[in-house]
Length: 450
Image 1: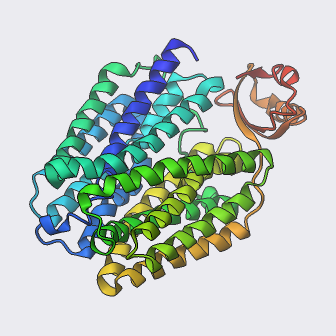
Image 2: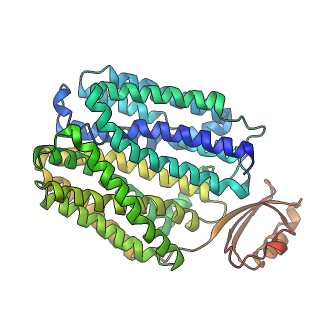
Image 3: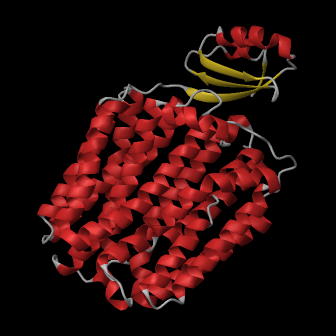
């Protein structure tokens, strides 16, 4: 990676991390600080936890499309400004209704697609996977940090102070976009990162992609359910004061990250990701049952949270990779757009429905709602095909006229290691799925560069 690519990758990773940090820090604390918020009920607490996901799901694709028209940076800065205003609204609200409104507004600053597109504009194809990996790691790190910082900051400042810290993080992210992120000389169009509305219907009809979309929906649905019950159980049943919850999340996060690495390595090297996923989804269900059956035991709750995050971190890291592999050549951007929408929608509905279930039926209500969803996902994983072990490749073709498209397509498809190809003559680009272990790069370079 050259200097500009490193700068772009680091700065945009920081923007992602700061924004997600602000969204995540509330999760482990809102339920246990509900007694300090006017008008709070379990159902409204659940809605406040998940509210950001609903507006994020509705607006992230439109915001990405808008960035194609008016530019990436303006959309990102506007989105972060909306996020900042939502944080202020929640900070200065004395009631749960105001916090819910603030969370909805935070989610309306939906900039994920625009940030990804800007990163694509600023990196070359051969380095884009590294850049995206840096962003992914920053999101994972922000989640872990948020689980620890949320309880610590709230202990010192209260819920309103937590939202003020979130507002400051949004301002910092805006500054990074304005002065730290390079401005691309040319805004590129790349089907591997952009959502094509005309492809959405076909994407949603693909049964293998749909399994992955449902999977990320349920994963974040259940995550929100966890934060409805576990913080309350740690405090009210296991006797751990809310000010000390941070060390439970720190301990379980560190251990769960260590635990997931061998399974990722085994799944990739042995090409048995489906089998490892079946076990991970089953582990999610086991963790929920333990959280319910051992809800008055501190050790039992710690074990359940550890098992949950071990499975969660593995699945959160693996699912995007599977979407990328499963998506047809030239359709990755649309597939990831649908996937992300399902992810945020799962968070939104998971918080809202788990809150209603807890208010109406207590712990058993949340277990039935989230456990049933997890069991459905386990069945879907059991019936999925073994994922393809291929890599996406975008190749800028040497000049091709429309009459030569079929011939060029057939010749590229015949290259050893090329599994799938889509040639877009208007873009002078070929989108490929390749097996890099057997790819004849020398012959492929006769048709273009990547």
